[in-house]
Structures are given as C-alpha cells and as structure tokens.
Length: 215
Image (cartoon, rainbow, N blue to C red; front, side, top):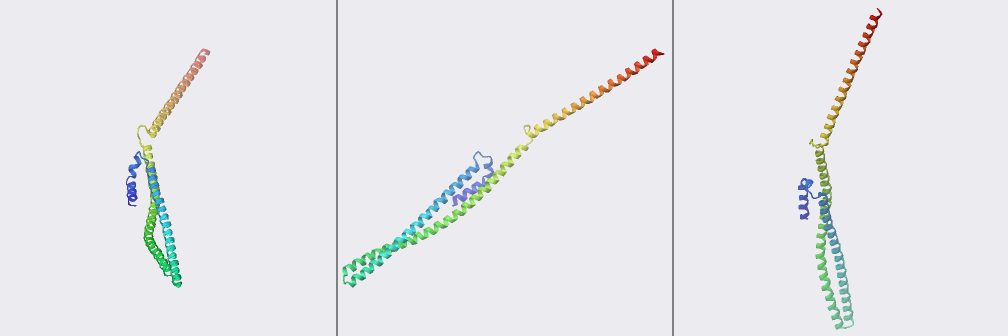
C-alpha cells in the first residue's frame, strides 16, 4: 500500500514534466492502474481461498467432534455390556478425535484472525483503487488542459512563420493592390477629362473657323 501511495505522489509531482516527455503519461497511468487492479484481484482471490479453507477446517472440526461423541456413546454401551476392552478402545479413539478437533479449533482461530486482516487489507486496497481511478481522471484532465493550452500558445505565437504573420502579409499585399487600383482609376479619369477638354477646344476652334470663313 505504501508503494502505491508513493507512486501516486510521483505521478502528481511530475505532471508538468510528463507534458513534454516522450513517454505517454496516459499510458503510464493506465499501466499503474492495471497493476493496482491485478493486486486487488489477487487479494480478493486470497480472501476467497482463506474463507474456503476456514469453512473446510470448521467442517472437519465438527466431524471430529461428532466422531468423538459417537465414540463416547460406544464406550458407554460397552461398559453396559461389561466389555471393558471395547470401552477402552472406544475411549482411545474418542481421545484421538478430541485432539484433532482441538487442533482444528486452534487453526480456526488463527484463520479467523488472518481472514479479518485480509478483509481489512482488501477494503483498504479497494478504497485506494477507487481513489486512484479518480486521481487518474483528474490528472488526465489536467494533462489535456495543459497540452491544449500549450498548443494554443504555439498557435498564437507571433513568429515569422506563424499563420497570423502570413495573414498580415496577405492583408498588406491586398492593401497595396487596392491602392494601385485606385491610383489607376484616378489616372484614367484624369486622362479622360483632359481628352474631353481638348475635344471641346477643337470644337470651339472649328466653329470659329467656320464663322470666320462665312464673314
């Protein structure tokens, strides 16, 4: 558990470093979550096996206790028949069953303590796993936000090769073209006005010539 806690502290401490690192932080987080999930599955299996063993041990203890009780009844029956040898043999078997049952009961107590600890560890690990999943989502969101911000800053950077510099150059060229077109229009209009004046002068001159010839 301490290992995973330390690992997640490393994850949080190196978020900014991972943004520019060649290693994919999302993949590393996924690997850590997968490892933690494997530990959780293994612990669940361990708890299940311990519980199954505990139940089997309890069943064996009950069987030996029942066998010991049966042997005692046989010993009583043998005494009633005045068969001391059979009673002694039944009591010996009873004693053996009782010893086995006592041993199994001690095992049950030890197993019960181990199972309680396993269940507590399992609950702790499940809680840590849920926290880890939430941390993974938050860290990935921070990474995505930081990466998006970095791309935006790169896009807005006013370098010679940036799109905004290209837009400025195109706009400046457009202004030049518009100014040149306006100048051409003004020049053509001035030339047309000059020709019109010259035509009026020629017309007036011709009228004067005609009037002079008539007189």
